[in-house]
Amino acid sequence: MSTGTSVVRISRALDERLDALAVKTGRRKSYYASKAIEQYLEDCEDYLLAVSAYEESKGKERYSLAEVEQRLAVGAGDNAARRKGPQKPRLGRSGASKKISQDAD
Image 1: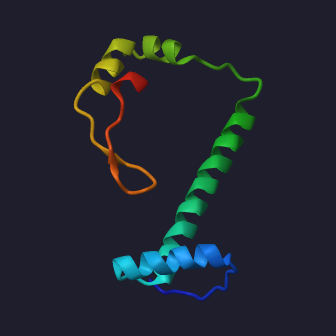
Image 2: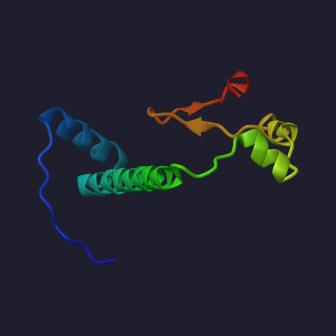
């Protein structure tokens, strides 16, 4: 993959956090900056596609989740049973593993 160079101004506090992360992990600051920008762009693209799809759907018939499940012969119980199975831990912002609450479903 070819790379390019961009200049981005960030706050001193953010730069210090980026420095600390780079030192702790042995990676370059540019690696984390690139990954953060990539994730941000993906999120923005997803959001804009969702807004576009919503705008296109105005005036068209919409269906509730229950209606879709009924039409596809998929019961809500089927979906709920899958969710209640073994849960994989998710990583939070701090990077620490967190168990997902079963009650949250």
